Length: 286
Image 1 (cartoon, rainbow, N blue to C red):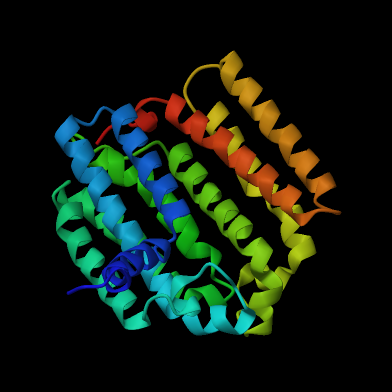
Image 2: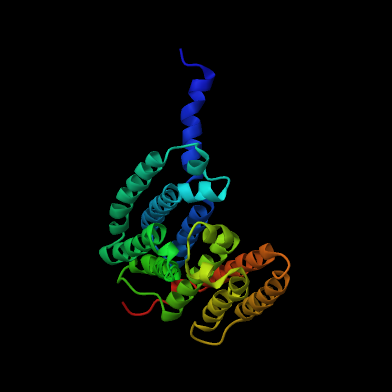
């Protein structure tokens, strides 16, 4: 007879596995991809394939990160990390990461060879970040590459395999750099204590706080001014709002570091809105 306590063990492991996949970024990136696919005009079946490929890729990236960083997370006392907390074993999470990656490959290529290559390049960059580049001065590069590859993955899955406009790719790369700075900012001191010396850690919290809005606002400018024709009122309002929020975050961040991070998230949200309102992602000739 299975006792109630025994029956909850698998459920706890499932919850721990779900918690170790970095659910916040997973949901945001997957939802953004689905929205981009719809905006770009992909057919419903292709939208599902595109979204499924990104979902499995993000699962593999998150699980790889949590399993690889378990010892470092334990050393710095980071809470809410299931592997570091002992809620699930690193081997189980590594197995899940490899299984998700194995699913990601055929799903990506089902969207087309060019699209699949673009997406798997992004996934490979993220794994390289987790396993090595995070602790080097090149830590920003995988983020820039992966975020630029996301709209390319979507448009290359369309008939004719068009590339996004250059300003979409550039804005994606800048959003990636901003995401890297914002993601690392709260953990810089703990990272330095465990020997992680990526680009933001070398700059230090003060410089990162000042630099954080720069790539995000630059992305706002590209997304607002890049499309052909004069920008509309909404684009100009979003660009002005991004600038004001960035300035406010920089000023308030001197006393409260979280204010700088919150401002960066708000600017990034405006950038995503600008990207989605661009319809078609500025695609041109194939």
